[in-house]
Structures are given as structure tokens and as C-alpha cells.
Image (cartoon, rainbow, N blue to C red; front, side, top):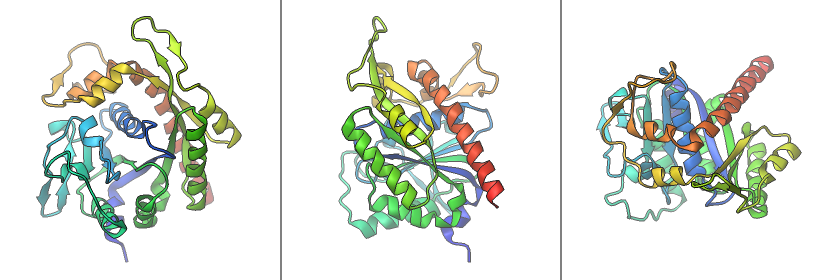
Length: 300
């Protein structure tokens, strides 16, 4: 018998879970960039961004959607669309359900489990090419609940690990890798975030947290190294004070695969140094997805 989660996920092609071993490595900003980069990869691509960091939801703020309501329909919750009427980028977070964005979420495991089940079974995601899931740091109840509910669609699952170059972060990233192997979750690759700081004035790169640790770990563990992202002050300012109100129609030269009408956050994101760097990361990630699909096809 098909479960409610399996029925809802039937129209989702790929589910990408973003993991980090510890907090503060920029996992949510990477999740947001991944969703934006997938969105801009084609004018037809439909993306969902699910925030299951229940006690520290930050996706609504990063998308500039703080205070947006979630509506109920006869077919379940309607997600919040970051791109307005285009409805190609849907988002859901417990942050949308709080009366005040400063309210804390003090829940025990069973209630967290119930919320995650609702996000997966009751949200009207519709047809999606990619559902990006931003998870809490570490490997906790939320991760186990997530994978338990998604077990019927396990063939659609894959993960990305985010770390910073410090030894402590890399040690915790290894725990994520161990967890993924234990639950048979395919890893698309590893991203080293905060790999140096680019001076906005002169462009000089300073290795504040050292660099190269993530790449070395990927090579050692035979993972795909997706790339490095330096600290980008323009991106930090954008996601800290994101505002998607009002769509901007672009009439200048643009990538022919991009929609002629693009929402404001995407337009501003494309102007940051991180956008071009993430485009290279996305290319490798899509290659990993393609390789994983071929491997699954050969296995079957």
C-alpha cells in the first residue's frame, strides 16, 4: 500500500538532502544557493526548498519570505513561492508557521517527527525536478525521521555534505559520511564552505580558516569534491537582508536558458561572486546525479 509520503513524492524527480556535521558552516546558505542555482539552470526547472531545521529555521529569512503565510487547500498546505506567480520555486519551513519569527520551537522528538511527516505528506509540492532539504547540523532525530518517511522513495534520494576547512568541522563531516553509509544514502559530493575570505576592495584572498581540508577529505574518502566557496560579503548581506518583494523583468543580455522574468532575489544573487563559483559546483553535482542514475539503472 502506497504511503501518503510516497504518494506526494511521486511527482518529485530528485530529492537532495544537505548535511553538515556541525553548526555554523553555512549549510543553509549552501542549500539556498543550490536551490537558486538549480532554478536558474533552465527556464523549465521546478525546485522545492524544504527547511527541516525545526529549532533554527533560517530559510524564510534567506529567501526574503519572513512573515509569509502558509495557506490550506483541499489538497494540503500550499507552499510559499519565492518567485511569485512563476511558481517554479516553492519553499516550506516551520518558520512560516510561527506567530512571531522570534518565537522558539521547544519540541520533543515525537512532535518533530510529526512535523517532518506533515511537510512530506501534506505539502502540495506538485511536480518538482528537485526538492532540496536543509537539515539541522549533526545526525539527529530529524535525520532519522526524514529517512524513515522517505524510505518508500529511497531511489530518489542523495545527499551533499557541507564543511569548512577547520579540523573540527572536518571531523564532524566524517560523522555525516559515516551516517550516510550506515543508512545507504548516496553522497553526491562535498562542498568546502568559508574557504578563505575575498577582500571586497582588492580581491586578495586570506585563508582565515585555512583551506584545502575539504578537498583532502574528499580525495581520502573517494568522494566527489564539488568545490570551494570563500566568504562572500555580498552574499552574506544579501541573504541576511533578502527581499523578494516585486519581480524584476530583465531586458539585458542573459543566458538563453533563463526565464526572461526573474524574481528579485535571483537577480541580486546572480550579481554576487558566489553565483559563478556555485555554477561550477552545480555542474559537478548534476554530473554526480547523472552518474548515480546510470549506476542505479545498471543495478536494476
